[in-house]
Amino acid sequence: MAAVAEALFLTPSAVSQQIAQLEEEVGMPLTERQGRGVRLTPAGERLVAHAERILIMLDEAKSDLAEIKREIAGVLRVAAFPTVAAALLPQAIQALQASYPHLDIVFKELEPADGLAALGSWNVDVAFVDNLTNLLVQKYKNIDQVPLIEDVLYVLLPQGHRLAQRQSLAVSDLRGERWALDSAVSFYGEFILNLCRRAGYEPRVNAECRGFEVVREMVASGCSISIIPGLRRVNDLAGVSAVKLRPEARRRISVAFRHGERNHPAVKVFLDQMVLTAKAVSEATN
Picture 1 (cartoon, helix red, strand yellow):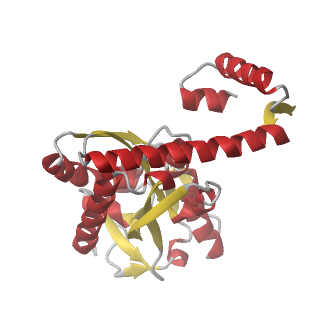
Picture 2 (tube, rainbow, N blue to C red):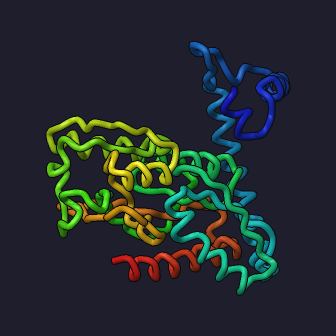
């Protein structure tokens, strides 16, 4: 109930009241208690399935009408995680503003899993995801994706580190180092930990940070090392060196959108621009 209330900007009691009213209208319980939370009853699950189909049809209707109108305008709500938000999104928004002055793009910084949840609950119109959250994407039947870019991972080292001049590094070369990880990104942090575990050791994490800025400073000061997405190299990395992993490790980044809005003019031009921007950035960084 608390998660639903947060997603809908309501109080938990307001959500409970809405569900109680709906149960009164349909004449049967739609939720039941499970431990400290609640779960849908079979009737609730069926009603949700009907609601999802109705919402998809509404998306399709809005897209059709917008296509007939042929005016690219209004508000497009975008969820993106920090790596993409810093490396790709500003360039794309700038290009779209120049071409479509009546289109307002509103950006919200969300990690892939949170952005996907916001997309599935109709709180945003498009969301950036990566293949680390692909299992979550599969849970949403009405979500499609357009592939954007494959992001190569790099080891981040202090400039004076003994390994900083190498052309490439294996994860096994980093045994015994102290690590700074971005704990705000649970999927990515777990992915890095598992890379070390597959190399035969448990990394010594001496910094759990809530953002890349702190990770960078921990590395630049010589306190830690880390592994970062290659897209981070688009911006200045003063005081640190980035060395490619061996064998090469990548994560695939896509833009997700609701199936019913595939033909919405604003969504279409946004997707087209993101593909162009991602191609330009990929060519510049590889």
